[in-house]
Length: 274
Ligand code: ADP
Picture 1 (cartoon, rainbow, N blue to C red):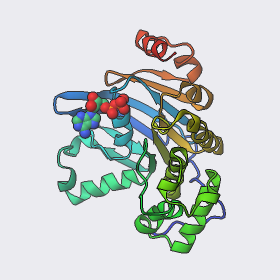
Picture 2 (cartoon, protein in one colour):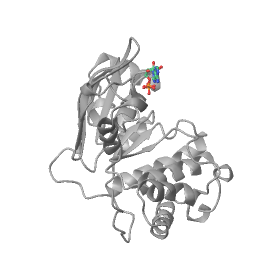
Picture 3 (cartoon, rainbow, N blue to C red):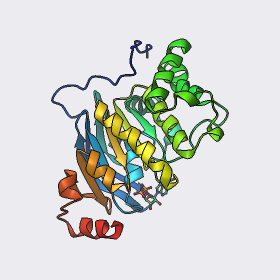
């Protein structure tokens, strides 16, 4: 792709008006004979935050990875922006051996989203700044000076302008996670995916990361967040998906799904967390 135009502020793409940004239809994924996602459908509107909650092993991470084409579902359709992938025609076991057209399709889908992982995903021998510029320079062929300028702005946004030249081992877990967020944003994704971004952190470091995520939500980034932080979900989510047994058992506003769950499985799950 041609390099993205430079902008004075690190900015997200303008959402297309009145349309869902993400449409997931009848997604199914199994590992061997273990069906992890049975039949998952939902939509995400531009500029909204979707929190995905549910018991451990219920398929939340698998769902997120499917949106980023890191996981190839058995069937179902994912549309993000102007890219639609029908997984029914793609062999999930073929990974590296897929026909070129299908690999291109998956890469095109992946470019719409940036992923923030649980932990330990920064390049250890690169500084915070280099970690953030890597994607734009190597993947998107952005001129280095431009990428560096934007990376500094993004590190500033996540509160790390003082730490740009430090290596991951010189940063706390929370700071590393904020570098991870800046790195995801550097690719100018339409959608930011967070996979339990605070679950590996010491409790005193969780607040800073959630604070950055709240600020991004307020800025209008579209976010899908797998999380156990119910208070964050209540404060920030526009919609909550409760997933269990490979299905979305309950979906709605946090004041409904979390504060007033209708389904017994949601009620049981939430009671255990309280
Ligand atoms: P959650 O994020 O809700 O904890 P996951 O999506 O990580 O759940 O995992 C759902 C189920 O799928 C788990 O039982 C897990 O062991 C299984 N699973 C995930 N990835 C793989 C894989 N690559 N191979 C085999 N089983 C997997």
